[in-house]
Structures are given as C-alpha cells and as structure tokens.
Image (cartoon, rainbow, N blue to C red):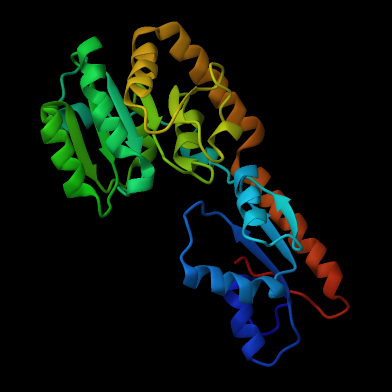
Length: 294
C-alpha cells in the first residue's frame, strides 16, 4: 500500500499519516442520505484532499454542489450491473412453494434494506388497492433492516398479512428477482437504485419512485413506470397496470434489459474508473504507480 500513488479516500488518510508524498485521491459520492452535522464537518475537512470526485448520478452531483464541494473536479460514472450474474438467470423454481404461494399467483417484489428511506410503508399502504384489482397477488419484501417490526405492524393494520412475505436475507437475489412479475422500488430518496437496474437486467418490468437518480435510469412508460413518492394510489395503479397488461409489461421489460446492457453494465463502470486511475498515474509520474481501488 505505501508504494501506491493513487488511492481511494479510505486509504488516503493512512498514506498521509505514514509521511509519504500526498497521493492523487479519488473519492466516490454515492449516498443520498441527509448528513449529520458531524458528517458535514468531516466532508469539509476531507474535501481539500480530494483531487477528483466520482458521482453516481446527476442527482448526487447536485447534492455535492449543494454541500459546497464546488471546486472539486467531477465525473459522472453510474454504478453498473454484473451481467454475468444476471444474464440467462432462471427464476427460483421453489420460491412459491417455499413461502406458501399459489403456483399461478403474481409476485410483486422489492429488494433492499428495510429502512425508512426505501419507502416500504407506501408500498404496504398501496397493497390493499393492488389486491382489490388482482386478488391473488403476493408482495415479496426481500432484505433486512431496522424497520422489520414496524413493517410487520403496517401489514397487520392493513389486513394484508396473508399476501405479504418478508423473506429476510437471501443469497440468491438474481434467481429471486427473476421470479418477480413486477419489481418495485418505492424509495423516498435514492442515489441511483442498483436493485432496480438488476431487475431490468432480468427483463423484469419495473415501477419506481420519481426521485433522486431513478429518472436517469427509467424513461416513464418506456423502460419502466415512474410514480410520485409517498403516493399509495399512484403506486398501486402502476403495479396493477403491469400485472394486467402483459404486452406492456413485456415491452417495458425488454426495453429495460436493453438499456442496462447499453448503459449500465459493470464493465462500462470499470472502464470509466480505470480511465480516471490512469489519469492519476500520469499526474504523479515519474514514480512507479500501483492503483488501489477505494
């Protein structure tokens, strides 16, 4: 490590403390969360150390500017999907049996941390409206987090427990996602939304909130359906539309698949990041360089 000239910010501080010449530092801004005063102070101190900043969406770039990090050079590099994990993925064939769902029941799924910003309460509040139109539908909530008990309470209050499944952690996310009839991301804020890109890579039709970086991935009515956050009726209507209109769902699924292959695959991301590291290598020559991803 101590011979490196290009590092991510996680390693930069250690290098500096070791007394070596200041390396060329690349950092990545990939969070849309509201920062605490302590976080803001840390950013203020660290920003002068950064030579180049990667942002994962235009929405995050706007947040960076709002935080006052105007002088840092920036590049937009979207997170990418590892297509080797998702291309030709077969659906999990035991999923319905495992969770007691009827063989012909439609599955609407959401994958992500069970935290407030992910919007699960809105999805649960929308679910009675979905069931009124598609009574056999099941909602699969995949993931772990601090809101599990609160979400169970909402499901009970809505009277939908029999049609909502909390899977907890799954290690077969591609196979589970491939079994969805519709994938949903009802977030209240989102930097980019990698899980929805993964669903698109599997040709799953998607419904997502029109927040943060999500509209940069989804063209409404073409590669997915966008809905306002905190709007259960709009979310339910979009889900029902895709469950009922199989032709539209198929068109959206195929368009999303093609978009991920063209613009959001991991190899494009790797190539773009490598180009930045090469730029850093030229900036710190003539000493030999070793790149360390941060």
